[in-house]
Structure formats: C-alpha cells, structure tokens
Length: 187
Image 1 (cartoon, rainbow, N blue to C red):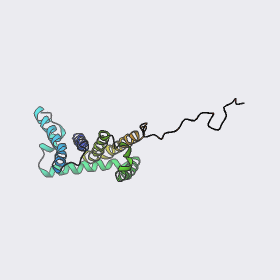
Image 2 (cartoon, rainbow, N blue to C red):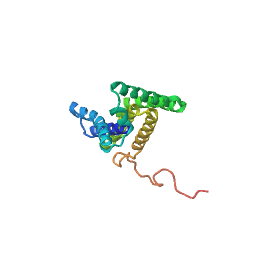
Image 3 (cartoon, rainbow, N blue to C red):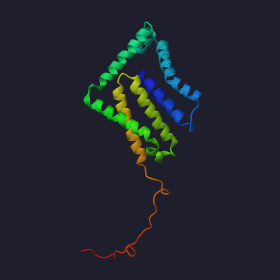
Image 4 (cartoon, rainbow, N blue to C red):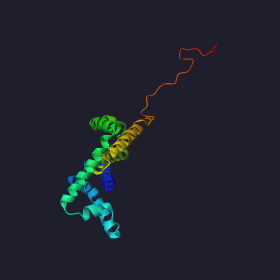
C-alpha cells in the first residue's frame, strides 16, 4: 500500500510540475486524490480477485475507525524504530538539512536546468515521492535515505552537464609564434 501511495504522489506531482504554469486548485485537488484512488484500486483488485491481501484484511474487514487508527499508530512506531541505527539517524538528520537548503536555494541550484522542464518535473516528482513515501511507509527512514541519495545524484548529474557551446566563454586560439614563447627543442 505504501508503494502505491508513494508512486501515485510522485507521478501526480511530476504531472503538475510538467504543466509549465501554476496549477489551479482543482488540478491540485485531483493530484492529491490520485494516491487515494490508487489505494482504492488496489483494494478493489484484491476484493475482485479474492487475494486476501494484508491491506484488505486489516482495513476493509477491520472493526471501524479505531482499528484503522491503531494500524496507523503501529506503522508509525515501526517506522520511527528505523532511526535506532545511528548511521540512519545521522543520515536522516543531515538529509533534513540538505532538503531544507535545497528547497530554500532551488532557484540557484537548478538554474542550469531552466531549459529542461521535463527533468525538473522528474525532480519534483521524486521529491514528492520521497516525502510521501517517508510518511506513508513503515520503513520511512529507509525510503527517505534512498530518495535523498537519488535526488542528490540526479541534481549532481544534471548540474555537471557541459554548457552549450554558445554559452561557453570564447577563447582565441594562440599559436606558439604569437604566445610569447618560442617553440624549440627542449633538453
């Protein structure tokens, strides 16, 4: 279930970011509903096929809202226990700072990618999938770590692309004759 919510949120955000304009409230509302529709579709498929998945057994056949809240509470506790590993806790702490600084300085960081709206839509989709996946899965810290590293690598890859020739500074070629250094035998 967490994967369906994660991918639905990432895909919906990427679509919103690819519009090229500020989305209307209606479009944002539709994008917010998409992950829930995906979960509903997953439950419907399980009921249709009599699969008996954990989601269907615990949510659909549960004993009301109290059981649902109990499931959410247990999943949050399981997710938080992932921070027990010191390396995971440190990575997540540093990651939160990196994400904050990245969001704060996004215009400068992604300035070389202004002419790549599809790549930027992918970055926004991956960011949303990381945030939503962290909150929607019982392995939240692991999802955050993986998403963080992938976003850092994607950003580094995109920023390392060579500038187009027209943007590169023009240098006049110098020959040995006019460079002030005479070409001759060394040694």
